[in-house]
Length: 61
Image 1: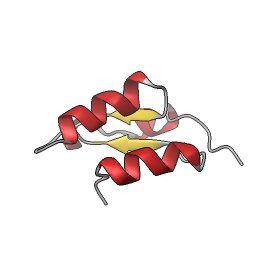
Image 2: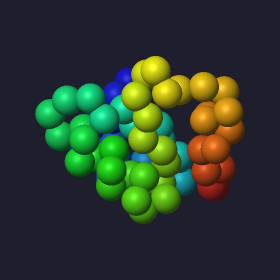
Image 3: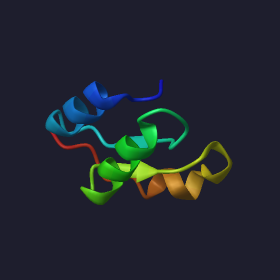
């Protein structure tokens, strides 16, 4: 699933970190906003590695 702005706004409120690919339409803006606010990471498909996934912030209750 690739988050749009609705998911990007709702997931941090639920304490769910995100991995957002900056690939099209408004996703460049969404990916940058998620990363800048510490709510997750932005990475292209080629950049996703196990090490990157371990850098995601922990889920909060």
